[in-house]
Image (cartoon, rainbow, N blue to C red; front, side, top):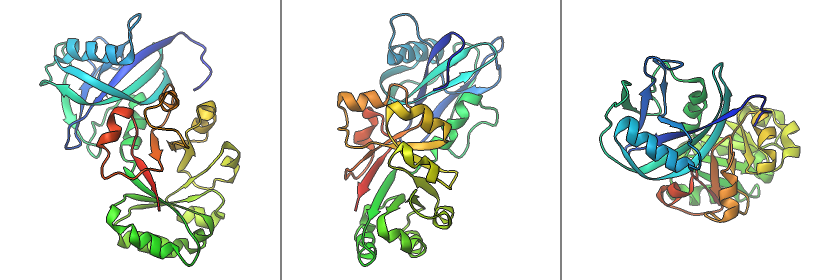
Length: 287
């Protein structure tokens, strides 16, 4: 987070999800700053409220909806002319009702490929986050074994692949096989040379000290709260957990001020539903 020079307005922003991938957005009514811009609905936290409590109240008052549960996702800050805001974005699949525009606004459901043209600046990063893969494989194998491991994981139906270790030398061949298996993105560790990094779809690091090695605009980092500001400044797009048990107090600490989505690593799952209540963007499976 940046150094704060103005009073901070705390805001809860809700991403109310449907099972088909759609989510709710609303327009800002006349008389408010940025009238006509679309945003994820929510509002200011009142004294003593948690983010979920504020969201539930705002959804009831503004849209006539009942939000039963939500999970933290990302926290973003923005210095608007009228206020410095800290936006706590939470996601919910556990809500009820049909949206009713009770404050003169408009509302509708959109998907990640079809957002409104006029979106608040603070919501623009959400567009990028929503296009992140859900299920990753992590490959660190010898030159003689990487193909066997990757083919054996074909039935896992992963969306993306992280490659490290000596098999990075076979990156071109790995990318060809990944495409054959339906894997859309291949990222490499920052110790890969510049040519390999440029061929890859993105680069990940294991520590903040490796940021100087990065030669690709798309960056992933370990989820280390003490380095959030540094990682955000470097342009990191997502983070991954490192030995933290999902649902633990250490896991919850990761979501206090994370400026990017976090993946749970080192697990094997068939879908993301068990992760929803914990806030994880998706999961990383080691092969």
